[in-house]
Length: 243
Image (cartoon, rainbow, N blue to C red; front, side, top):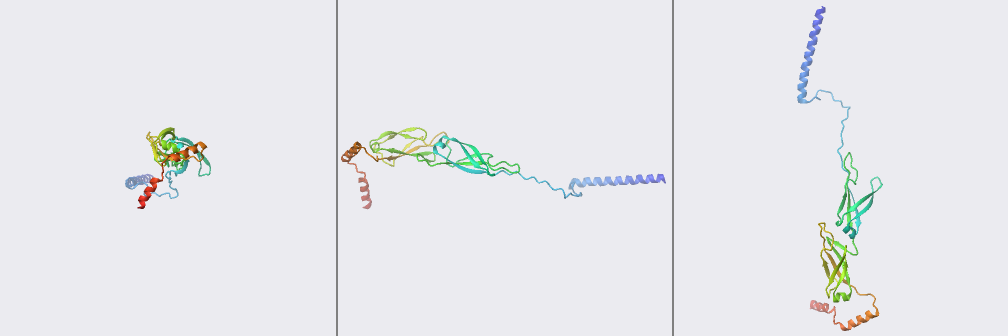
């Protein structure tokens, strides 16, 4: 009986091991084609970890005004802006010489903060060149006024004209009139390629508001001697048009 029990136990153990081996081979075959998760219970209580993608911060844009001279020469300028948290932050800006009107300067990473590891946005500063009482900027050309006395306009002369960066000697032909323009090449605004535009001066003939006794006598004498009448041609043209 004892020997029989031992034999039965060994047979049973061998049968179970054989069964487990067949199941293991089937399981490996099944997992090779369908994956190891099939047939196993999933733990629904374990949440899946989701990682948010990085988001770049928004860009910020502002504008500052500078004079034509400042734009021509360039400058370093400090500006203060209020951040999203209400605090004031100061920025050092280098405005390059010859910057154009409405051109933008970019400060990388000085915009709003990024999220989930994303980069900060940028700060864009638009440069607005102010209108000037002395110069007008159109493209790369500068425009200014050239005031002359009546005798300078009548006789012709050479005068010094104040440009944006130096004095320019300008020849005035005799008989020039108000509204005529004189162009001085290469004395305008910087073109960004090492060259410059032109400077154009519009003539304005100025009459003295107050005369000395001697000046008045000279004008009276000129009035008597001169046969010039600026209204003659105007009246002739008017008659031709009416006819």
